[in-house]
Image 1: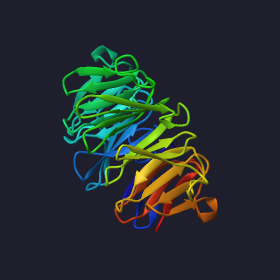
Image 2: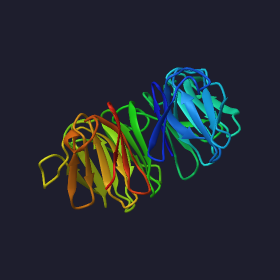
Image 3: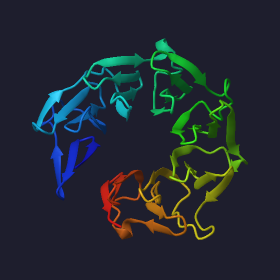
Image 4: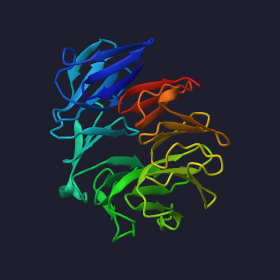
Length: 315
């Protein structure tokens, strides 16, 4: 089954049927963020966006129960770590919730974060957590914040962090409002902005890595870029038979076969298999042209989250 969070309840899709769960089944009325699985396959955790906490659905018992309370506004799940802990961020810091529901930590500026607004988290191979904020990147080792990387300390193009990607080679990629940075395994930084390789100081919307180790970058108005073998390649509409319908790429998803899906701002979606491009619009059945997120199932089915609902594509 697939589960979708919305501002009008939770949607479950199974056996080709959509079922909407609203206040009659949920412990509280609230808008919901993205859904994160709980500590085992029988539990699903739903983080409430507006500040009353986590609701837990037991699939075996088909019953709801309240989870830990998180007194945060605009709260959304960001990740689940290797220990099964839930990381939920908001404008009041980052909560780390154990699988048993115990709140293990609440990280704010008092604990060393550069900002209380936490927009994302990524985990490096050493187990450290990298937290994205509008005032730089914070490194948390499980006990304390050990480093802050920003324009002053690391030379980042901007303190406004928009995307994080721990790559398979041990490097950390940091997307910002004005460009991109890469920290290699030795701790050395390299920065990419106007002229190298971008056409201007561009916002990085998303980052992804393909099985061959290439890093792909989604930008706002500059198309998509690929970094492999220390070489950049730009992909934009109308050049070299590229069929990206727009230069404003919001999200990138990597399929199990290594193919790439691109979600575009009010221009639909595109697929690239390494040699051939396909574009998808409302004429092809996409419910809305603003594609904000993409999920590729192991079966090859592709799900698109849009401003007008959900679309499914079967190759």
